[in-house]
Structure formats: C-alpha cells, structure tokens
Length: 427
Ligand SMILES: Cc1cc2nc3c(=O)[nH]c(=O)nc-3n(C[C@H](O)[C@H](O)[C@H](O)COP(=O)(O)OP(=O)(O)OC[C@H]3O[C@@H](n4cnc5c(N)ncnc54)[C@H](O)[C@@H]3O)c2cc1C
Image (cartoon, rainbow, N blue to C red; front, side, top):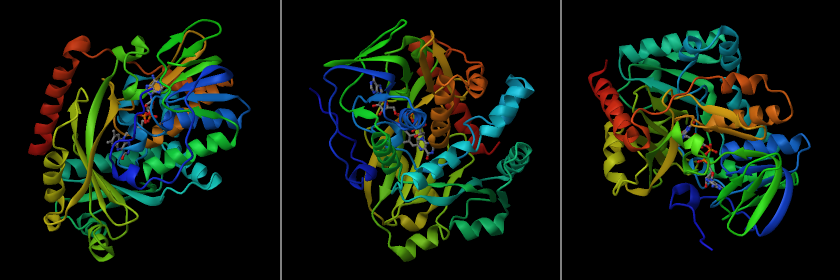
C-alpha cells in the first residue's frame, strides 16, 4: 500500500501533532461519504455532522495534503472573479445571494477556530496592494461594489498609509480588509479534521476513491474497501484526476509556488509588515506574502498551467520576493514547494449535483480558503433540503476549455501570457 507523505513544506515541518489515521479496509455504511480531506471536504463534513448526519471521509493521502495544506494561508474574501462579473452573467436575485455570501467563508473559519479551539496562528487583516493608478481605481470600485452587498469593513489606503503596513515602495495604495487575515493552513485543516472526529465522523487516510458506483445507493470504492452511502460529496478539486470525467472536462489543474525564508528575527520582520497583515497585489499573475508566527516571510506567486512541478521553485519565486523586498537579498530560503489549484474558464467555482445523490464543489481558481469553507456549508444545506444558496452557485454558467483536454494548457498559458504582459505594462 503506497503511503503518500506531505510535501516538504514549512507547514508540514511546523504541523501540530496528530494521531495516525486508519486506511479503509472492508465495508462501511454511512449517510454521506466525502471524497477528499481538504477544506471543501472537511467543511462539508463538519456542517453535516453538526446537523446529525453520519459522515465518512476518504482521503487519498493525508488530511490537508492538497492545496488546503500548502496555500499562502491568506484569508481572502469574495471569489476569484468578482460580483460585477457575476451580476453580468446571472439575474439580480442570484447575484444578490452570491454577493451576500462573498464574505461568509472568513466568518465560518473564525467560528470554527473559536468553537473547536483550533491552533492555527489566526491573524486579522489582509491588504490588496495597487501597483499603479489603474489598480487603485479597480480597488475603489471593488470597495463600492462590496459595500452594495453589505460588506462595509473595508478601508482604502493611500500612498502614505500603505507605507505604514508594508515596507515596499512599489505600491501606490491599497485596500485593507480587517475581515481578511491569515492562518497556518495545514494546522487549520488538521484542527478541522480533529473536530470532525470529535463529532463522531471517521476519516480514512491513504484511501483514494478509485471508482464510484452510481445509482440509488451509491458506493465509493477504494483499493481495500468500500463505503455505502446515501450521498456522496466529491471534494478532490485539483487532485481528483479523472475519477469523475464530467468534472475533469470543464476545469484545469494549475500549479503555483511558495517559498519560505529562514526566520528573520522580530526586528526585521516588523519593518517589513509592521501590522502583521497579509498582502496580495492586484496583478492578474499576482504575488502574495505574509509573516509566519516564527517571523519567516512566506512568499508565493506564479502559475504553471497544467500543474507540472517546476524543477527549481526558488529560482522562480525568489526574484519576485526581492523585487518587493530587496533588503532580503542575503536571507536564506528554507522551504520551497508547489501546490495545485483548479482553474475554470470563468474563474468562478463549479458547484452541482450528478444524478440525485452525488454533490460537488470545485474550481475556485485561486482564492479558495474562504470559499471552500462556505461551500461546505452550502453543500450541507442542500443535503438537508435547503438548496436556495446551492442553486445560486449551481446555476453559474460554465464552459469547457477551448481545445479540450489536449490543448487547454497551451491556450490557458497564452491567455496568461497576455495578462502577464498587461501586468508588466500596467494597463
Ligand atoms: C500554493 C497555493 C497557494 C494558495 N494560496 C491561497 C491563499 O493564500 N488564499 C486563498 O484563498 N487560496 C489560496 N489557494 C487556493 C486554496 O488553497 C484552494 O482553493 C483550497 O485549499 C482548495 O480546497 P479543496 O478542499 O477544494 O481542495 P484540496 O485542498 O486540494 O483538497 C483535495 C483533497 O482531495 C484529495 N483527493 C483527491 N482525489 C481523491 C480521491 N480520488 N480519493 C480521495 N481523496 C482524494 C486530495 O488528496 C486532497 O487532500 C492556494 C492554492 C495553492 C495551491
């Protein structure tokens, strides 16, 4: 039996201790079988358990093995495409529902952390940083847009104010969201998994779903066992492969890379990000960074279309970090890793149902820490028969990538090249 470990990330090296989890062997019966123990799967499992369902989670590797245990740790509200895009593609009632939900994921994370006492270094405050006046104009209209849906905790930062939150001369201003913030992402997932188990849920690790038997009484098959369930939730996102061909057709796994410096020491760390907020810039191919609790800088950026692992991650990301912070030129990089997120053509999440009893959510296309927590709640509501919010997501239009599975990677890379050029030229 293959035993897939975590990648060698800073998060794996600083993970809270957890008990070993079993491999699924033999037959199990449950109400809901969740495939994948990332935030989507764990959040679904938690809401379902809190509402009296029996839940069994099967995870191909380990809890938080995918993007949920590797990401930048930034609690970024709203979706990867914003509500103005949603307003243009759906009716006002659906846009209203989706707009109202745009900041709910961050609240769910905070409720979970408080309720289950999850030790994940939660900090409040996230900044969107503008590199030029066009970005600043975008942030101003973004603030107005979000306020229309009741999200009023946002503050515009002018060129002087942004210098108070980050020691980088590249920005002309920004937007501060105190309901954003950051976490140790793997420890959040591990804490949520412990909460699932505390409510009587079971999580099997190293137990990939290899086949789903569909029908009135669906069965999830793993190498050594099977789960009979009333409902299945598919939450494998960019790591799902072709288990559910309908889901693979309209999405594309993409890699993005993260580096972590050696500890900087309190004094240097405080000069870089004095308020300890996290930050992402407004480019299409954006850079994002924050401090860890032991005062390292975690810096991410770049996208590899088609999710190939680049040979030298540090060589790709370090120059981006030094562009923001040349003062770190002599600082050693202790960790570098890659992780996959799932891109859709619209960059909006894909949510839906296959037949009567197989539910899914995937493809939040970059910003997923908050959305996935919301998705778990929305999927759980649908299983309880309250599908209004689920339907608002499920009705979003989605299209296959041009060129099909063979050509979708070069096409998406061409699109990204174009947007990358726009970023560089500032238009
Ligand atoms: C490097 C990186 C940085 C990011 N930074 C940020 C950020 O700072 N802020 C933000 O908002 N978003 C960020 N994201 C996106 C965010 O992390 C994801 O959107 C989110 O974690 C997706 O959660 P998920 O549960 O849907 O998928 P995942 O966390 O990928 O979980 C899927 C799980 O399913 C399992 N699985 C797959 N197939 C099977 C199977 N057949 N059987 C059983 N199990 C299976 C996998 O092993 C995996 O554990 C980042 C993503 C990456 C990769």
